Length: 302
Image (cartoon, rainbow, N blue to C red; front, top):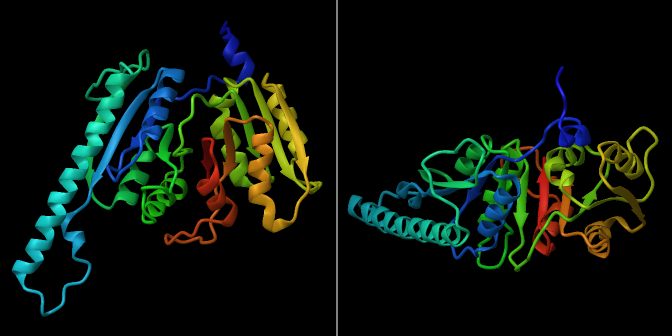
């Protein structure tokens, strides 16, 4: 006879996080996302894979006219290569400084899941495509919030992870924080994306003290409501409740965020949305607002 553990009885199946991808850009990136990645690793006894993408020097020449000599092209490539190497060194140094401060050993590949470990890898290519592809082999990707010292081009990287990885993404705010996951707020609208986000967040929800499911307006009778989701989570042994709020459509993002903060949430879970179905993504209004303004980590899934 197979006996389920207490954790398995609580959530139905054993759910956990063991493989964390942590992209490090080297572009004046702050330490908070890296610290959060290691914090998450300690929470789940997981492995952190640090990743830096070195750009192809040839990509620095987007258009070569007839008037540009071969020497000029080579000079541009040499400068781009030198800058790329310097950036990769900054990224690796920052990663290792925080890793060593956390007392986490560096190994060549993921271990057996019985201890917290880390590894470092550098690949070459288009940053958003490489990170998105590498994310497909991780339980979760931990990445910095856009804005601040990270340029607008960083949004392309974030979009790639959110919409092309098929895995959940944890976006960490630029400001300092002490902990996350004690009180979790879920932004619920009955969509497929929201449902996937809840499923992806289950390892963190299972470790939380309280879950608040937030929904704007009234529910469609054929779509699960916030109350239904709270009941579902309750059946898994979680302390979950529902909160309703009313608002004008254009104010949904700030009201959603303020409702989460009023609930004392230190982690937000929601679906990621885009205005475009194609590769040239344009983040949806609510998604972009939350990414730009949230002062707590956000777990998103598309």
